[in-house]
Structure formats: structure tokens, C-alpha cells
Length: 123
Image 1 (cartoon, rainbow, N blue to C red):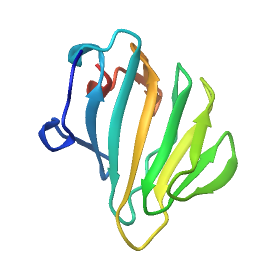
Image 2 (image 1 turned 60 degrees about the vertical axis):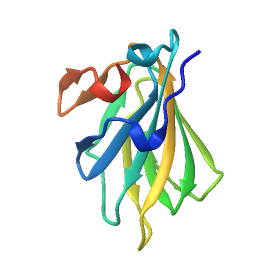
Image 3 (image 1 turned 90 degrees about the horizontal axis):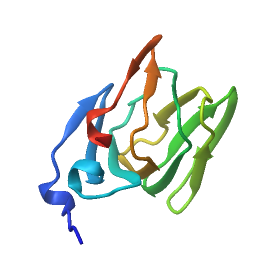
Image 4 (image 1 turned 180 degrees about the vertical axis):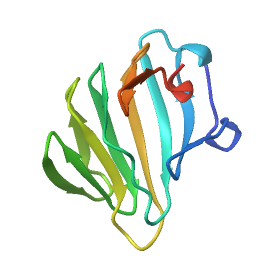
């Protein structure tokens, strides 16, 4: 059993977002990677894709997403499942901060601007 407190989680910042790992292989999870996402007003990711399915659950604020060219709006409690390989843009569409939980398979890799990377918050 592993417990990771959000207040003590390491923070990774990229494209205006802050990612805090809660359950990852380096934190004792064998199969999943789960992290908390903070999105200040105006934060927007570049188009990217993951090699594994990814699920977002909005906790606070509003998030917009474009998945494979389809736009959706998400409010607290809403879940978005992004298929593996689909192009995703995630953005805060509210005037205040937004928060979400993101979950995927351990070992996933992202492709951003044509470059493959293993996000450090998912390791």
C-alpha cells in the first residue's frame, strides 16, 4: 500500500499546467499512472497524443478539449476518455482555475510536436 498526499506531491510544470503525480510506478503503482492537473485561466496544451488511453475527471472549474477534431466542454464530475493515438488539446475555458485528475496506463508515452516523450509525472 502506498499513500501520496496531494500537498506533498512533486510539481511538474509544462505549457501553463501543473502536474502532480499521485499513483505512478515510482510511487508504487504497477499498472496505472494517476496525476492531478492544475490549469490556470488561459492554459492550453499543444496538440499531442498518447500511446495509451487516457481518462480525465474534472474536479473544479471548466475544461475544454478537442479530441480528434471534436470539441467538448467539461464541468466538475465530468469524465473524458481519450482513445490511444487521438490528437488532444486541453484548455481551461473558465475565468478561474480548473483542476482534474488524469489516469492512464503505466509506461505511456506522449507525442508532442513530433517528439516522443515519457512524461516525468507519469513515471
